[in-house]
Image 1: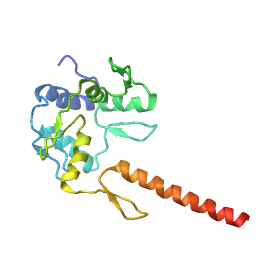
Image 2: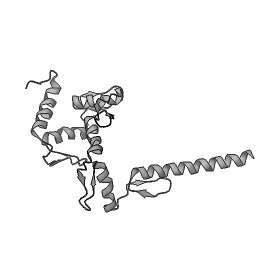
Image 3: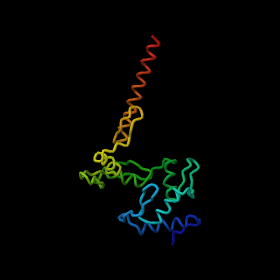
Image 4: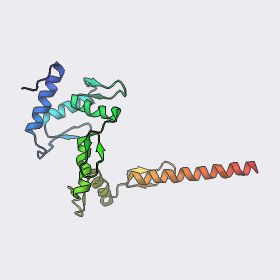
Length: 184
């Protein structure tokens, strides 16, 4: 291979990631599932590397600044943008910049109108997978976000965030009213 790395631990990672990425197109099904967390992979080798996380195997690359660890050099480099603030990927339509190429690609769907994620129940389409997942809760009735103050449950995390703000405002008003009574 013309792009062989010089550091021994990375030779294995390079061979088992770069070349398999070329062989495994995104159209391949993710048929290898992790029994610990349910995450799925298109290649058995990727699953085995992932499972080492659950077995407590320490990744080879770590960031002193935050303590995060990575098994692949490319993942470490991508993470470094968090610390440097670098956003090298620019949208040609609006000029907005992103730290990761995948974030730019997701953003560009706003301009193209592409909505590749479709609900199998009602046919509604979404430009982000997370939006589809949130929508699907409408059909299942799942409400995973609950308020510890009032016990109410909600479909979307934004709703629980707003409820918490409302509770905090009510508490602040109550405290201010009590202080006002004490002063008078």
